[in-house]
Image 1 (cartoon, rainbow, N blue to C red):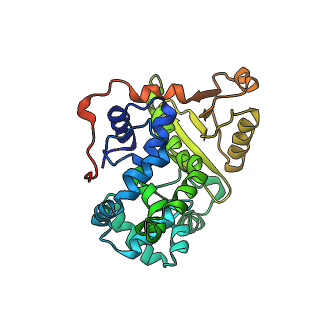
Image 2 (image 1 turned 90 degrees about the horizontal axis):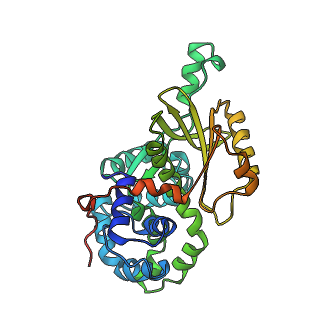
Length: 312
C-alpha cells in the first residue's frame, strides 16, 4: 500500500488544487481513490455526485477488502468515528478483545488498516524491580489503528453507518454530519503530513524516530528524535483561527505531565500565528504553517500517479 505522502503527492498532481488547504480538505475524502476530480466544485457536491450516487459500485469494491463481513464493517466504523484506540473500538463494536484482535489482524493483512504504537516508554527509574516493570508493560495503553487510505476512513466514518438512507437516495443526514465534522476530520491527515514534513525539513540533523505519543494522561501529536539525540515535540492545529501563545504553554504542560524533555518545541498551524507568538519564535520554538508544506510536493513525477478504485 502506498504511503500517505505518496498518495497525497499523487492526488495533488492529478487534480491541481488551488491551495494546500484545498488539497488537504479534498484529499481527506478522495485520497486513495485514484480519481481525477474537479476541486473547483464544492466538496459536498462532489461527495454526492461521485460517492453517494455511486454507492453500489463503491460498496462492491470496498466489500472486496472486507469480505462484506458485518463484524469487520462494525469495527472499521468504530475506528473511523472514535479515538482509534483498539480497546475503544472493541467497546463500541461490542466485541471481546480476542474477537477484535482477530478481526484487526485480518484488516491489517488486507491493507485497510495499519497499527500505530505510542512513543511512550515506561521510564526505567519508575520501575526498579524487573518483575513490576514486566507487569506494567503487559498493561500498557492501547495501540491505535490508522486507515491506510483517506477514502476508506471517510467511507466508514460517514457512508457505512448511513447506508440505509443512502440506498434510499436520502443524503441529507450524511452531508449535514460531514459539514459539522469536516474540520476535525481533516485534522488527522494534517498531523500525519506534519510528520512527513519534519522528515523532509530536518536535513542537517535527520529524524531517526518519529510518531505520536499517548499515555493514560496526555496525548502529544508528534514526538521525534534526531540523529544527534534532540527530542522534538509538536502539536498540529488544523483550525480556522491563528495559534496564540497559550498553545505553546499547553504543549509545555503536556511534556511535564509525560515527563518528556523537549529540546525543540514545534507548532503547526493551518491559519498561522499571533504576532506575540511569532515574536517568541527561536531555535527552541519553531512555527510552521501550510505554505511550508510545499516541500512535500517538490519534484513530483507523472510516474508517481497511483491508481485506486475503479471508476463507474
